[in-house]
Length: 253
Image (cartoon, rainbow, N blue to C red; front, side, top):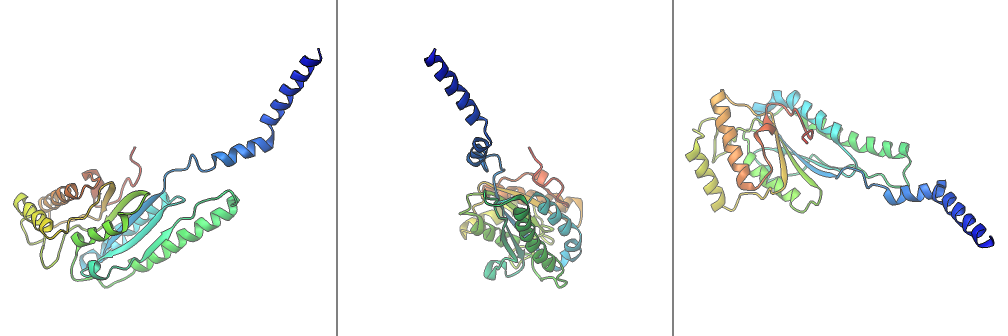
């Protein structure tokens, strides 16, 4: 009887400990952060050419609003410009990391830190989009090499957002004047390969907003160029993420 009584007390004591508040807190500590979404490295390249002055005030601003809505702890967001000198003297307008919540942060304290980081990004972006003077050229191709430089060592999920009409306008390539057919695309890719200028965008998910052209035929030919060029870079690209607006940012299954 004494042996059975001791066993009953042991079982009862174990049950109390198992369901005690202290044990639940310990379990919460061990599981902290397990269900949080994987952080991302988001690079946003903003076309600053004169032809996109209107788009910066409308399409690009709307695109940033969608990006802000998805920001989560641990994300890094880098915003830079596409200009004639981006490849030479690139300097990001934004390079901000959204803080992670720790076990030492209460909800209010963390929300304040999150809000401050988000406001830093929004303020810098607003100053960038408010610039009225556009640049003469649009060096999209070389800007992709900058994205490669920023992302190649990142362990987070990699996302590249290009806010541009996607009309390359440089000394070498002028899409608005050229006949952008398969032969032209082959020649550009071959030349870039010879110059060792094809960026490595493997595992980088690409979005394009602001795409435009003089007519639908030119639009499709330019879209075809970027579809083939992104394929050569190894990027995760789909024509569903190429268009005038950033509609379904990070809402894909």
